[in-house]
Amino acid sequence: MPASKFHGKRGKRLFVAVAVPLAVVLILVSAWAYAETTRLNELVRTKNIRISNLQTELSDTQGEYATYKRNAEDTIAGKNAEIVEKADRITRLEADVSNLQLAVSGLERDVQDWQDRYSETYSELQMTSQELSQAQAELDELSALTSESYSQLTGMLEWVDKNAYLPSSIWDEVHTCGDPVTVSGGDCYVNTYDLGQDMVNCFDYSLDETRGDSQSVSTCKEFWKGKSGDCDDFALFAAAWLRKEIEESSCENIWVVLQDQPSWVCDFAGCDRKTVTASPDDVYVVCGALADGSGHCVVGISKGDDIGSEEELRDIRLFEPQGGKYLGDEFTNLHAIISDSDLMFYNGWEVSRTLLGIKKGYDEFIARYGVSFSLSGH
Image (cartoon, rainbow, N blue to C red):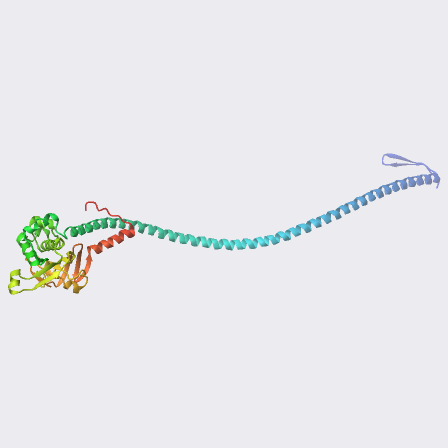
């Protein structure tokens, strides 16, 4: 088809159609195709290079990924191992915690138990402290009372001791009343009947109504000075006189003669007479109840050193210091006996207490509890 020239109008633009030869067209098309092919080949080459680069990058990335993956897997495996180990440790710790919780619970129970016991012990301690304070107060009070009683007790024992024998000041004068001692064949005889007569010659019987029920006894000095008293005053003085005569005797043998009549009657007509040996500590003041129920005090001489049994007590030979009459056994029961060192109280024929026995108890109390008593003024 020959080239032609034409004019055309597209829109406002004017196209002019020109007739071109076919060869030219083919050349142009071939040039264009070549150029386009070259361009496309270059583009393909460029794309291939890009793809190669991308493949290289992808390979590198895949290598890096594989490395990262291996590292990640190793890390995860290590972490998993750590997790397992930590899980095991947690399990062990949980077991330990459980055991510790059980132990803590036990300790809490123990602590509560100890708190309860402490509270109970503290309460008991408080009560004990209060009881101890009360006991201490009672002990102080008892100590004060005991101190006073102990002083009174030692005072009574001193009183017994001071009146066991006539004091020297009275001994020098008492024979102005009479002398109950006679000497025969080198032996001395103390006649209790004569001693009793000498007593009534020097002293008057008088009941001290100011005493009331106190039953106090005059000392030998008081009785000698006042020259009067009742039966216990007579008995205490007569016993002290008799002990002194026995103690002061210069004879190798000394006898005590008891009789119920004057010597001239006994010598002429006979009487109830007993001649016995005696030491000062065989002489007693004996107080008891007579058959009519009245109380009376006389002087007694024991048959031995011991008067612990009823038989030995009933064997004491009695004489009346107010006149000297030998009485034998006239008491139905005993009230008290005063020796040269002790005062003994009786219930019937059985001893109930003695001053020395009471003092022994006080002394044991003092030794045991360390209580000290002030005896000032006694």
